[in-house]
Image (cartoon, rainbow, N blue to C red):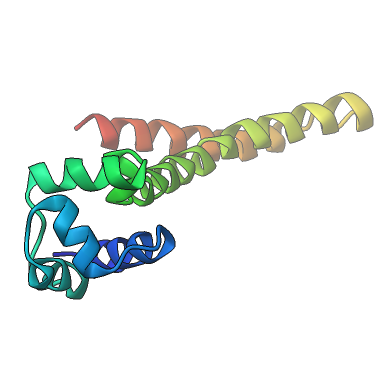
Length: 128
C-alpha cells in the first residue's frame, strides 16, 4: 500500500476523533486491521474504502488522494503548453519590430523560420 494513503487514513481518523477501536467497530473489523492499514502493511478492500469514505464524509478520490495524480497530469499538460508559444512569440516579436521600427530585413525571415521548423518537427515526432 502507498505510504501516503496510509498516512492519509491515519490523519483522517484523528481529525474525526476516532480511535482505532471505534473505527474498527464501525467497520466490523479488528483494530489490528486498522493498524496495518495505517502502517502501510495492508490495504483496505473496496467495501471498507466505501465505508471509510461515508464515515469521514468525503469521496473516494479525496480519501485516496487521487487529486495528487490529477495535479501531476496537469503539470505534464503545462509542459506541453510551454513548448508551443515559442513560434508564436517569435512571430509576434517579428511583427512588432517590423511595424514599429520598420525592421523588415530579410534576415528576420530566416530568424522566423527556425521556430517554425522546430514546431513542425515536434508535431511530426509526436504523430509517430
